Image 1: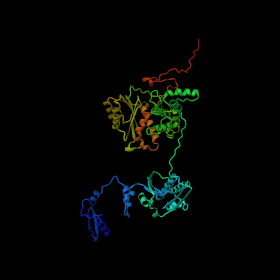
Image 2: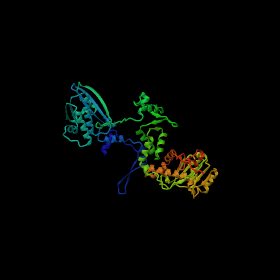
Image 3: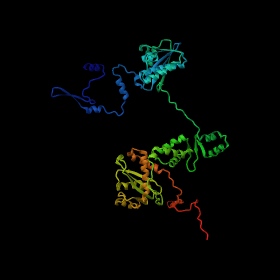
Image 4: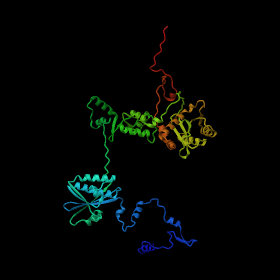
Length: 529
């Protein structure tokens, strides 16, 4: 060891320093048993070697690879590997060719790539006979069928090489020592190894993938669509030969227009709708139903959402109905009514955000932050819902929710309807509502349907959470905003008339059905005296 240190010191590779400030000083301490202990102050050592948050493993590999070698070439600093070949024509014209691989390859794969590149060059030059000299024993014997290729990669390369060799009238391949094939090792040695009087041309090719890897070919199936007759009429004024179909196309084209090469449908109260094929519409329905803000709604709501997003195709409603019937989660988490129907409770709200209903959901599976409850507020006029996940349900949390989610966003309401829970029926929350002049109403224990609007929203939230999360129920707090967004943007409809001929009226009388005589009812007949 002393000799090695002296040798490195003599050539100036290392030098001796005494008590430096940038290194840890080594102190030798005598042991009780007459031994020696080397003590190092690692504080200064840690300061001199700070942690690197951006390491360069490639340089570490290069440094480790230089162990035992005297020189480091620039080829080692370039990522990838290379190969060289020389193609000599009968006229003594040499074509020097270099390959650079942008993928990881073994030595045998590199040898095969060089062979395949030479065969491709000879084929492009319309060569009929070819003699191949290679220093790879494996490649030469496998091509000559002396060795068998057991590896899948070698088998693919061998098949590719034999296929190219069949394009020549005659060919031969021989192994030469590496010392006689030095001009093909690197481009820097090609010029010195060539014979005098031979022209010199250098070409460099970069390979992004192995030669045995075939490109992905996708078949494009262009089948006729429902938009083709309309597009042909707009672009070429072409109509079907059938007069009835031609009249239909001319009549339908009045509701369509072309924008930037795409067909759009004019809407009555909506913006232009992008026309899609049924295949494209299937993807749109899947994103709306199962996407980030999907709520697995019914077929009619799904179709209306697609239209509001700006898409249209003739079979939209039929495809939405079939799509929801095949959805696994829509079937497993569908509502199954188990109670008999009962008449609706009329709750009249004079204007938007004047009357709100409050209720609690829980306990639910514990999520992040130990939240397992949720407070829900619903406006009786617009059916707009607000919700917040809570770890505990106290009067202070309810007061904060009402102030932040209702008062600060929609103004001070006229009244709030809740159940008789202690979170709402307490002195602190009553004082809070009294200070803001909010009328606090409690549902009667004998008639809890008075607060049924919030119960209905709670049911929608629970169903949507189950449908979207399936078994991962603990993520419901993060999913709550998406559920609210999907429920508030859900299109709903009511039955225009019931079995007794009652129809709904406009305005405030919508919630109070008035009896009317059905058009199908027969007049009563009275007996004449």
